[in-house]
Length: 418
Image (cartoon, rainbow, N blue to C red):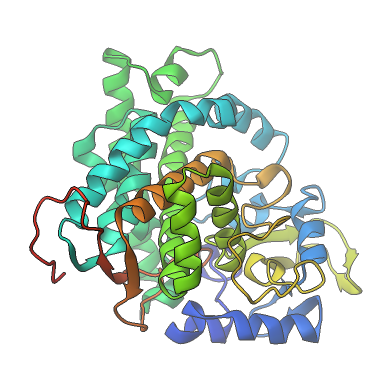
């Protein structure tokens, strides 16, 4: 989600374009942060922000650091909430904001829990074995949740997931040899999302239900059909990609730390929602599912001693800010009981994540259901392919070895071999 290159894409730093560097960027972030809070990168033509205070300053000031000029003609985000600034952003966000408030998302907890249990029964169905957390659990749970909230039928959710991944990938991470062709295909993926959402809107116009699209069709919000289409399309995409990585990153953090796994499982078995909420917050801090946010300066401004000129792109590295030792004690240690935990994993200011409460609810329920159903969890391998979206941090697959307790209700006693 950046500007400067063809189609509005700005290349990632060289270190983050490598598989190993993208999967484990934290030593690099620590080195860059130690070198300065805000640094100019001449090769990429942008400013990089690495400290907590500087990141908060940029993200909290939409008048000085804007979104719309940066997104430009990028097909994925043009004319969406991610590509707009106040007051237009405020107006359109306000139309759907009530559906994502804490009291509203709590109404979906039972459905989320039922889906999580079914996915675990299908994907972790033996006493012991292996399973890919991403394909069996971390992505189907969020796509089912957001699609159900909007009213999209189950039979198009797999396709929505596939075209969403294509729409948010970057040429760097996808290894595209022909960037223009890549971006053209990306534009086609965006059109496919539009077609799928359009079909849902047309169906809901004829047969309204208890869902967000039906509510929008019945409301007097002044949106054109195109605006409604772009709004719902973004909700579908943004409503699952970050949460997929949040869930997978939670399992990743726990599977490589037996003591943390035992601590979290104890909380899950006790139904300790507060402890599980702290676990989710620590994952958001430690392996932030959204690793960066991009803006452009609208005027000359100085941040942490750096003189930023009007028109300069500014990349705030959320991953780096969330491990700033000036704010977090022992920041490179994963502590599921960390409290307080003022991470900025879901942003700050008017562009903070609209679905933050839904994402955290899904993360907590997913953790509780998984930890309650397995007695041990470990990583099968340690070499991963990173997700191809530049603003996300996660992996495309996460194979784990699991064991379920003797009294677990499984579909078969045969070990899974994955």
